[in-house]
Length: 169
Image 1: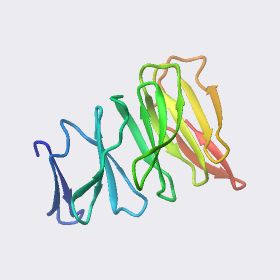
Image 2: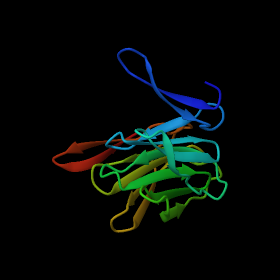
Image 3: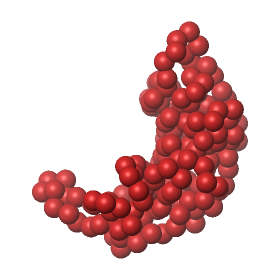
């Protein structure tokens, strides 16, 4: 659909709703943990939609920065948004920026992923770095995990070993 995003039933592919005026070409999506809201973003544009009413709840203000990636926290209270040069934390109820971390990289994180605790990981395209942000204690750790190669980080995932979070790249 042109400037529309369709919500389809996964078994019948029947259109269950249309998010009208939903941005420009090739939007990306990040669903809330309860699947009642979805962040739809493309370029510098973004909107949080209520899936039941098909209405925009609010737009995220990224100060005109290009949005590369987003992920909801497990409790659904915070959305991590990777933009050009920064990683921002937004309140999912009102859209207010409640924390940010600037990086020395003009392109944004290629991927962000929450652990099931308060840890957030981001992989950066231009520097092959990972940032792990303990959001509960506002502590950042940056590590070059692919120093010997020229590969890009395009995915981060969390797993658990002896109940401790382990970052996989």
